[in-house]
Length: 381
Image 1 (cartoon, rainbow, N blue to C red):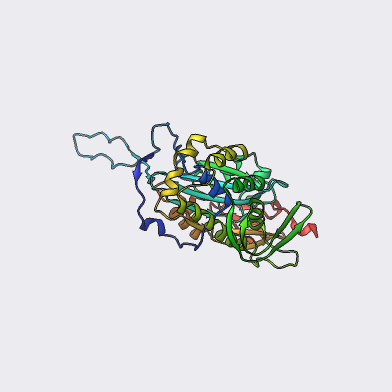
Image 2: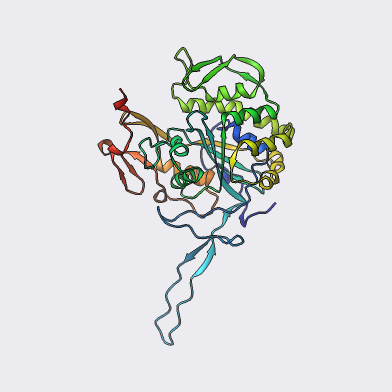
């Protein structure tokens, strides 16, 4: 199924970044693919040249263009006019398109899960990167975390704006689901027989969040799956020493098992109902036709999905903990796993923030984000 121009992606090219064993997946992504969410048929914008620059405009049937300079004419008589610039299409990586998946908390509207991905509609190859919820981003409000964008920004477009700064190109599609939506889709798809590796017990009356899942081999319901995915620390104070990164590792095992089960079977239980529910419960710019077009490609593809975690470290700014991306390693991962274009993304194209001592933070494009613009967690006591 050839939907875009450009070279097909080879096997070796898909492993230019270190692979994380297991799938840094979310149930929402697996369920979206179950409904056919891999059919990303529209055309994205090309990588922007500089921050604030405008990507080449797209005609529905025309690929983005870039201008290649040509040599000046010879000065010897008779004079020869300078040749016109050559318009060279900016090719895709195979038949790739990009997306961002957001798992939204119902009680606060903050984003509990952020996952960026690239899908090849011709081969079924899927690459996805989990971005920790506390990732430091360049926004106007004080809580400069990626999980705040959907809450304080102006809807999905604000998320795409921030993702464009982080990636160097604008994702084509977004999918937003809350915990209730994931639970309903999981149950509609038949749940999962799974070995729960520990007891999960946690109660937070403020969020009305109650997690109680016993360990052992058992059939998981949608409610139990969501509880495991959301767990970070128990009532006894034990949990993941590294917080959100630990939770991501737990998601790997559970959701890799779910994807493996469906891919081995070559089908999704109750796929038609899952697809109907998806459009009832999700907020997305995908169409039913797009969602349905490539489900079979994903399920039958010999390409194993590859999943990663955005590289970075934790920092503290005004008493608040943030996850700052490593610009060099992050750019390498973008080009290996997320960039749908043949032209590589450069660090200078990104708007990635780094802690900058008493001055607050500094962006990869040189702007200083003053300390006083950050929310003061220390003032909370």
